[in-house]
Image 1 (cartoon, chains in turn blue, cyan):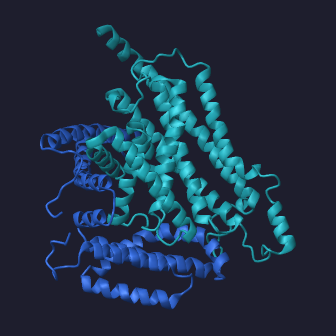
Image 2 (cartoon, helix red, strand yellow):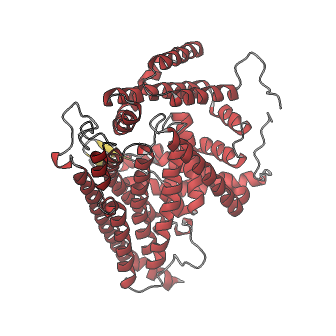
Image 3 (cartoon, chains in turn purple, blue):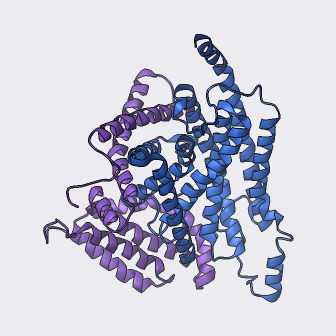
Length: 208
Length: 335
């Protein structure tokens, strides 16, 4: 079925998704130490980022947030890469961090320019099982609702337990336990409402 | 715990991707058979719950916080395959929306946390719960299985990260992962236990249970041999997992042969635990520098963690049954 998006308005989410995942695969399959190839990919990505108008400082700030974990894992995996590629241990670790950075920036850019509903529609059209796609849509819809509910519960708890130092393990766990009960209650209500409106397990949207 | 892009070797990424696709397909079919039209809302809401619950940060140590992973908790609530589907949904959203975990490592992450964490964890939880029976069995089973699910996932992580590399690299990665996750696993077990305890006290009907299993009331008298046997089995499993590096007949034989015949470069081989940061003062006790010491540290982490978790689970179950005995009795009296 042709995309209802007017041509020229913005690229179809499928194109963006395939391009981003393809870029990541291109980075992943690059042999370790192929700096020129990575540089060329990086320049291409930079062009896309500039064209898309995503905030570049924000991208790099997020990337820095991942750097500690990636650095730790790169240090663990560098031995394997160094052994198979002939790079020194330090260059192998640097190569892993650099390539991971490119992949991360590409996926961040994709997430910045593609609303989740569009991304899901693209995934469904590219063959994701419909049950999984509708679950993901539902999860996205209520994930933030539950997050807000949790924030309200945390505020209420703080308001009632002044003077206590930090939140204890048991108090935090009971917060989660109560959230679980409320979430499953909400699921019951929502499912009843969906059934009342003819829900039969297939997600139907206006654009397909 | 989420593997980012690039760090996995190509073979490991493809193999885990294939296993993950097959496993997720099977899990989706099982869940659909059981829940039908309700699949979407039940899986979606539970995934949303796990997503929100992961934002609660628990103090683990000075300046370090951890959060619930939730694979085992979802499996305890909804059954193993539903737990795997929930984890798959959480991982996909984390990957595409928050870049937590790489696209090319999505399969490996699902194998670790969904198939091993939720389905494998349930396989440990279920026999313990049956052996002990009642609420106590659910609580102890969930805690012990939560601990193992984290440790087994960490072990799988080490295998995937080291696949295609040398043996001593694998042991180095395994040691680091075991040391870090021995602590994380205790946290996961505690949080899972506290949440399951609250659910058992307030909403026991939420916990998935085969019809033959009675949650309400405890059909068995005071714990006798069964818990001891179950605990013994659990400890034996822990020992098997963490001492297995020792179990190979003459574990250093390959290296000896390799050095003799020079197919393993002997002088270039870096000291096993001096990396991750060989050019700096390695943040590792000097006792951990040899291969044997690495294995010993792995085994010790596994054993100590197992004992700690069993201690917590036992203590919590005791407190639980003590504080619970009266309300249950009065409920019976009213009925």
